Length: 508
Image 1 (cartoon, rainbow, N blue to C red):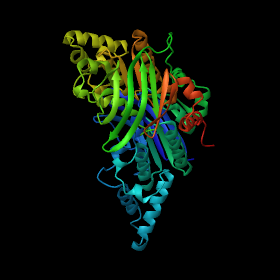
Image 2: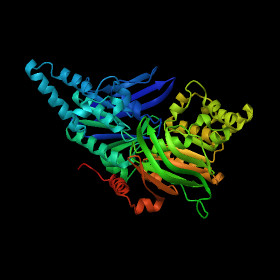
Image 3: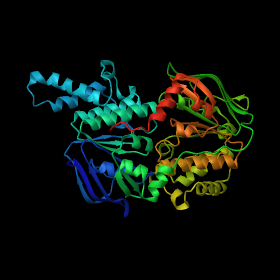
Image 4: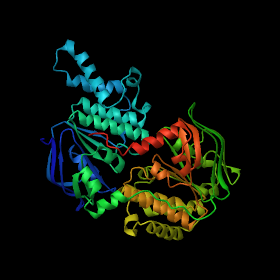
């Protein structure tokens, strides 16, 4: 079958350094080609080359051939490419009308409507007047993603580049995305999948390119690479599973953090209810649930970042103020928050080392020189070189920044570390390395307690206990092994069963 897009010997240089070097890619109608690799391996740069987009100041060589105007792009954060001031229906109608403008005037309206219905169906976004009346910010992340895909299909895209489409998604939503992309491919459209999620790659891909350091180190049919990987990096990538070994001991210590009768709101809407939840000294509690279930709201309440709530959050039996602005320096240091989007959590204009050191100065009163020395020791202990951390955040990869964010929180010497989806968006090797770092930290500080917000049940399995949220309600909690193997609540049953089925191939 003839290729609809090709990349030959692509090299992309920035400042004399090659971020993509000698990449070849053939895109075939009706097939899904996956690009996998660690953060900074060149996946996104290669995928965006199909759209003719490159980093500012890049020097290019090689050949990229694509069908003119017929490559669609579904970004990792779809809300960023939707016009926030226009309703979804208006966005889609503009595209559909442009596609039928050569038809007689009497036929245009019906033809445009038919195209919209078909695009929404292919994107697995049920058509409805209520949804079409919404603005992008009134849609969930998954709905935004499907609207962007529908736009690409309306434009007649013969190639769709899907950039990390399952990042931050629970097992049920992942399954929908797998079905959605499989249906697009069944229509004869080529899909280029950029992903760190090996379960989704196994479920979808026909062919796989494994990237490292800007180069393709292995490529071939997905089944062959899964069963008989040839390159050492591919074998490492496939064998990287989350692990956080249990520590010896009699279980969690005294209660450090306690939630009582918590009801959190966004404006007037109740988004979370949790009657009782505790965290013991040295314990790791995983909080799981679907997007929008209230996981991050709970985490932000614990850290004093969401103050619109009733009920109490107690540290060592003493209620914490709702807002971090009214918490004491000791209370701020005791409960530290590591954000999912590490890049957004750093000032882009200042070197990383100084930003990490500032935590020890502000929260512990350390002298600036001592803080800087301690920050450098902590960062290098997490695998980041001195030369690297003296750079600005934009020069670090996502995995490197996430380590720096963890170091910054650790410098406060917290009692409780709240980690909000810190493994989301990372490849398997980087994800495992980050969890290994948490293991080491907990080994060095047996009293450190961790709240691990995650959509990934494999990551949740490393915790001591699991709490399950659904629709803003705490529906189940208990020992991790018990919750994952013998769940009691119907939602937990559905979540675990879907996760177990996710690796099954969805297409013949």
